Amino acid sequence: MPKRILQGTVTSDKNDQTITVSVERRFTHPVLKKTIRKSKKYRAHDAENQFKTGDIVRIEECAPVSKTKRWRVVTEASA
Image (cartoon, rainbow, N blue to C red):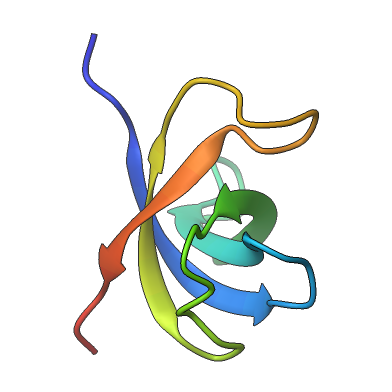
């Protein structure tokens, strides 16, 4: 089964080897036909602590690293 890859913005890098990534998705409301933005936060493993708040990164699904981390950083996305 292929692993999901998401792109989002780093919102926190306070924890050691962990970043919080906010991923936004846009979709059209089925009844109102209005574009809606929804965001969700994911905690991702960043082994070298190289990403800082505001960076745009790609994260990939992986085996559980801790209680809350199920994602790891693949690369920094080009803007």
